[in-house]
Image (tube, rainbow, N blue to C red; front, side):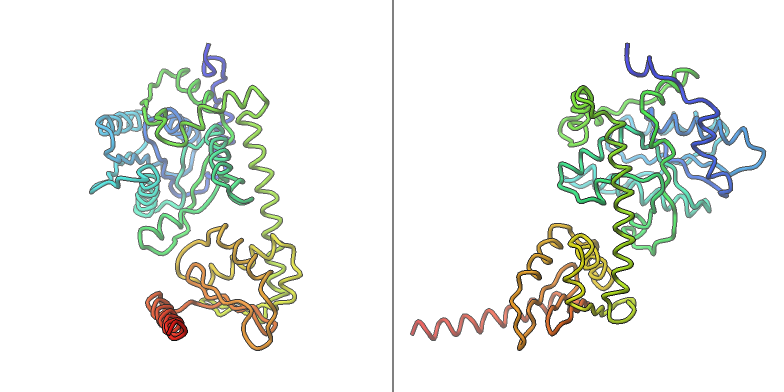
Length: 373
């Protein structure tokens, strides 16, 4: 007997608790691929909406990546199901050439970009996805394997922003929320829900393809569960880490007021008292520096490993009164430590930095050549 056979379907009362905080929304975009999780999300959302006298308009959106020959047929099946449930449906297609590497990552990025565009077009401020308890557990394992910090190990929250997708598309962040109503629901219960009402779903073989990291980690979960580390435990870990992460972020905000020489303004520069900064707890100092670099830099998120290396270099930099103790660029920001101040400002364009580096190298090379003579 499978886990789905033993699992209880999600009841109408449970569905109400999953979606009820979205009752006042004007419209909701539901991402539906046709697989079991997203099909169950569509069914449960439609059931919830049908029980309301007033509520949001539902728009099911299927993103056809064009990576499998079955994808068009699966999109049509979702459209038929949405019609039966009284839900509007759109299919959006990923056109153009596909990358030879990091295909899944790019496909996910395109998916969120298209979903954000669909939400804007429908006047919706929320996009619903079918991430489950099992997905949360896999995400924790994936980020552990990649050496993520505390924020990364907090994995997925119920509500986040789709600003990153909008930014990737070249648009300004528009405040569209990504909502995961099923994040605490096991996948087996969603399959049981569909079985109870006789609704079929598509099977994507890439979910079991060992060439991809997530399916390989998915295969480990039954073994880990035998040792007590099941999906529920991993999800609980993520929830507790998010709680700790929020507390540290609050401490960082308070520290910024204490160590900053004036308010932060868009584009910087940001000036911190070096002595007060050095006295901060290491994690608070690390995050404060990361915030400052992200605020003034122009090259996207700061990599944790590089940020840690910069902080380590700062703590070991010699104290020389006549010159800056340290001067580094990271993520489009120039960080200078010296004279009792830590200054973070926008780095000059890369072409300028390369030019200065070339000039310095040439001077050093000329000196060495003179010595050899």
